[in-house]
Length: 228
Image 1 (spheres, rainbow, N blue to C red):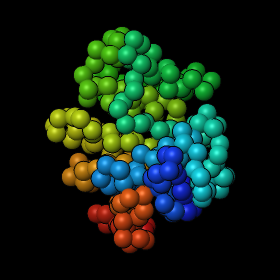
Image 2 (cartoon, helix red, strand yellow):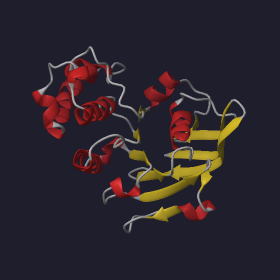
Image 3 (cartoon, one colour):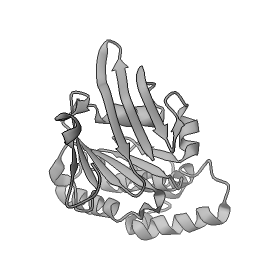
Image 4 (cartoon, rainbow, N blue to C red):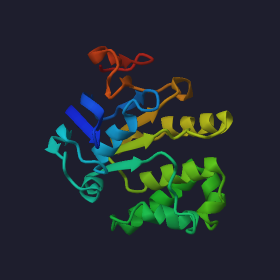
């Protein structure tokens, strides 16, 4: 579904990703694990079109999207929930969710997804007319996740969704992610802390200094999941 071939990304003279190759198959839930500066965020930004790679290729369903725009990539079915939540603070919860489906035209499907998001995240239902900027950190993260899902992506990527959250809230949020129906296709979660992940991951991929940690052996089977 997603394939990175020898991906290279730079910020000025600093090479943040150094020849990274990786595959994500349909139905998989893959975790990218690494310390701050390992290249996790850069990798996700390159996939979603927020950063143009200087080498290698990104393929999505056999289409080369290496230098496609962020809008084109979103229209193909890739959604990216970046680190830091980035909700629209002056908009209500409902209006933020509407922003997640601005490329869609299927009104009935959008209405169904609104209700599904409120079922998945009951706290958002209680606050649907509340301004997003007044929500707690955990509630804003729930909103950012739900907004990403409103686009009905085939691949959805989360960059450190538990960052800055209290352990109890982080655990609840990660449990919700593990239960997302992968009819969306596949999911990639970037995290620093392995202990924050719940069971249900298909694969665990270690990154260090922009490379697979330990080479190909870094694509570890986790909890009996398939693939390498």
